[in-house]
Amino acid sequence: MHGTLPLATPRLLLRRFSPADAPAMYTVWAGDAAVTRFLRWQPHKSAAETRSLLEAWRSMRAAAFTTGPSCAVRTAC
Image (tube, rainbow, N blue to C red; front, top):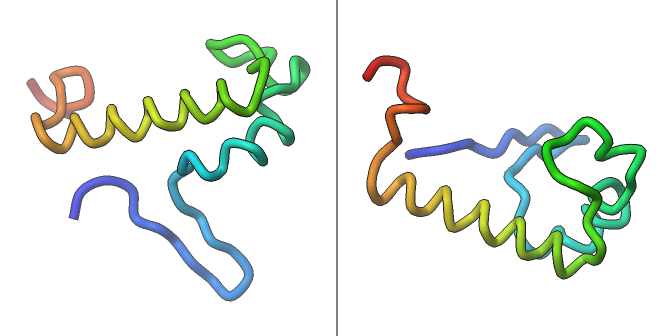
């Protein structure tokens, strides 16, 4: 299996973000200027913008597993 595997305990589930997480991600941190201050992108203006980002991340992951990792993410090129 490729990529990040979910990690589950009785009290915690760590998993990749999905587009369905956009409303919560936007509300909790992606739309907050104080939280995103040191990120490479500006605060999102809407949950729709957050959803677009999550869909782009999903597409990039899918492409990486279809074409293989780029030299930038390999340990040796």
